[in-house]
Length: 473
Image (cartoon, rainbow, N blue to C red):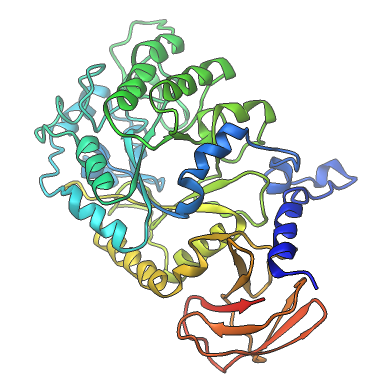
């Protein structure tokens, strides 16, 4: 009889070529937002990209995303006007603020309670393996000491400290990898950069003093600010990952300039796909040499296994920046844990964002939600870390599955407890030898009929979010 190692490894390999569904004979029926449409089944990352991810990214599984900047002090409202869209970090555009007014807001950004060591302790205690923070978001404000532009944390605020330097050092001191988000194309502070959404604001609103007939020069912006700042980050800080975003007007040639700068100074640094591709766009094979992994859409968890390794950028609330006014809400504990599980079981990393408050402290509700996830991981982390994605042909209706790296242990994530007390797992190739609850080690009764494994479960789950059963082969 085949061993579980061989059979599950074969399933893992086979699954790389079966993710694309057959398109309907009716072109109108094709969902162009579906993962099957966006990811051709023959997509493959380059060997050097795979080697970079093997150094740490594949193993990380769970990271902290941080949206922190001038917008953090506004909390979703400006001069009494509440921001209607959900993302607080877009308030400059949403509230139609001018550059001069926004610079005045920056002068009030003084996060005196920021403590990099405390931030890192929260992340590490709750199972996170890496941190990615907004070194520069679309507002053009840099959290680091930049010689390229004085619109930065040291020169334009009373705080006068380099957030990127302090957090980078704290992460590496505590064994976490460190990454920076950098908005390479959008930069509302520089009139030469493109504006993504003219419905929200216009260049003439952000920069009312521009001469009539002003024509932006995108390549001038890239040459004089964006590329030099990325080079500053790569040269002056220990960066393990760079997270680009909103690639407006980014051609292959322009994107390659950024890839080359990163590779020049940090050859092992991992690059995400939003350097050149939006999160929900069709993935093009010719772009694969420019980045190392796929960033799917905001808050998007794949519904199927993908041919490329990916990361899901989620957030504890409907906003990424800290927000107390207007349209926003926090997600529930069960949403957070189940989205983590589905992301890892689909073959990716889960990057969970919080927006720190303007005073520099982590949002208390984010700390609480991180703690719930951390408590669950302390008991069930074996089913997340050091695992591969679901080796079964399909995601089960009752939850999801992961498999140990050696292929000998299958982890069943039971997200919907069966009222019947019986759970069926189809597509199991080898004979199970034992089953037990991961939380307490108690045995679970089971029978196996061919490729179908049936478990007899108690009336209630051991965990209200996800009870994990460990099956040995």
